[in-house]
Image 1 (cartoon, rainbow, N blue to C red):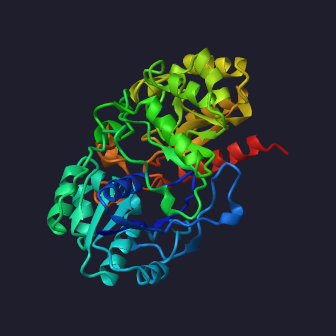
Image 2 (tube, rainbow, N blue to C red):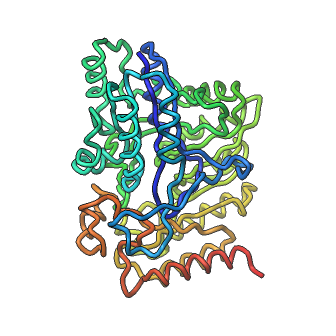
Length: 440
């Protein structure tokens, strides 16, 4: 059984590789390899290696392209990030015909790149079976079935058994190894060995989240909390370190939940390894769960930066969006980190900008609050995500038809701009943060 994995290019107004990686695709590839599959990977999301930073991040290769009709009125440059369709078709034509082509999709509004990859694969391999999975079909199922009609199967995140049955039937085989995606300790390591170089490896440590933030789709995608054992994570770190990997990325919405059973034993184990690694956490940790021991473990285990979610300093917005943390608790967490000797210049704090009916002055107040505490604010522009409470409650107030076409769910569009928070206000806030970071 020959299987081709494709991580498609994306089309957007801005994109950068903050340790971006098609983790789910690579896990599924490894499961199939355990069943005897021969794997080939085409990762369209190439980066400019000469500009890769010491922490592993890098800019994607990019090219200006025409905007789709739906976005003609947006006064920003639109680009393809990753290789062109022509390059993709050329690379596909050099590959032996696969029995199965697996294509992932990530952000909902990136579906044009996924559609392009499906069409290219269908043209080059008309007899191969094509399967698309990922976040887009999971959150926009009906739209995905319309846009990706050339695929033989479109699966949601929780339909792995449907995928297994399809492979059995389509390829006249019987997969012997067919784990649930929630059997985290049983999953084989993702097939990063298919890359010529591995600049970093993301570590899957859990699914689900104890919080129900109104802007986040994690509770919809993964209603139950599933944890991976610290021992299993440590073994994977050792495995990849043996392949020369020194940077690891933790994408975990729930990393500090039940910290005495999971995060602390894991970080202690990392600190006791006979080698040093660098750890990054793009998803942010919850300040309310940081204590003195954790602060020391962040230092000793190798966190080269620490990202924390505050989202807002407005008490009512904190309460109405989930009540995960408040300003007093956040300040206490920073004091604990500072007392433990953590380098506060490497602490970044997410602030949400562009929430429905949010006023720009509220965001500026949060920015000033964070700079006064000596940490870096990071503006996270609100993305309207289907199946979240905030999306369902406010979608009718958006200035674009965000329920009709996922293209309009792009956070760059500031879908909930209004007289109290305009595009001009957002540009001012971004410039304000830049100037505060680098005073003349």
